[in-house]
Image (cartoon, rainbow, N blue to C red; front, side):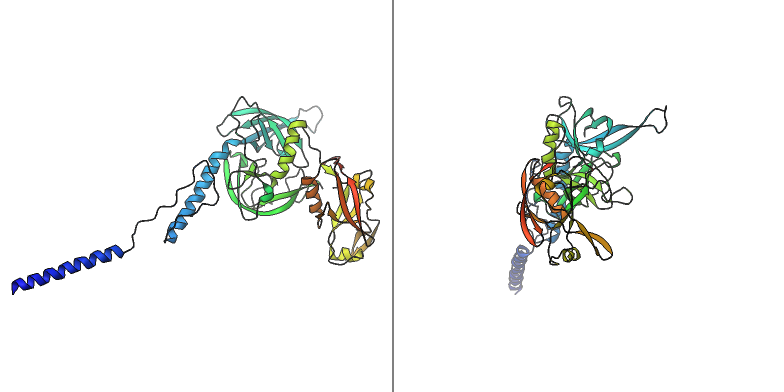
Length: 410
């Protein structure tokens, strides 16, 4: 009997062991699944595919790691191309017989080619009597101005390319930039060399007054298609690159909008599409010839349209003035000749309303400025479609060259 009990207990124990083994095989593992293989350092990819996992924590951690790796690799790749620029300018004495004083300033720039050309803002090197460029490894070289363009706030300076390795940046495509994508700035805010800040592209199609660091004052000529970003931009960032997540330059940091001259989350960068047009000319000739139509315009509002006898929904830009002897006057563009009162203010009426230029719709003055800057050259003929006295006309105009940066006409 005892023998039968022992045999029964042994059979029960064996069955329990089999059951426990089966349960163990079905239980989930506690080991964290490794993320997918990271991109190689040579490829800075903005959109990796996370490793498959049933754990949200793993995916989230993998995303955070990728963001860090992206910025680290981007900085290591691009920072050697970014330089600190120190300038010295003479300030004339206000009193006769006393010597001039010297003023120092700082900005940023980036290597454009292997010949030693460096791109920066015009306002960084304007009126400089001495320029020093410091690379990321601490090497400092003297630089000279090759060319400047106040109307785009761009300048090119040059150092001896045999004195230091030149690592040019990669120019991107600002026309393909989308609101919400990453925006990364590298520069020297407040003289703190090699500083990286990151954010997003906040808006596109802004415009800035040429040659001014304040977005609400300055010259009446405005730089079109400017990129707005919330990546922290501070004094000293001017002239440095704004980058996309591939490490390619999409703009040149130029200005901030802030009541305290420090980052308030609104920075501006000149689009690289304009840089690609202007910089080669600055290198070759020292200047850039801006195409010029010679008109002063205002966008139609519903009230202004009705005052002109047009439908309130009509869009376009009213020609208020034409420059004497300019391309528009030579082509026969008609400016406003009278004024009427709208909401207690005198507004011009009677001029041509431009609605198209070369089949490109024109709804605001920025549309005309952008088209001229990005699609035309001096001497090129353009076709203007205008509304005049209830009729639609086409006018052929041959573009001239902007006479100076303070001319108020487009």
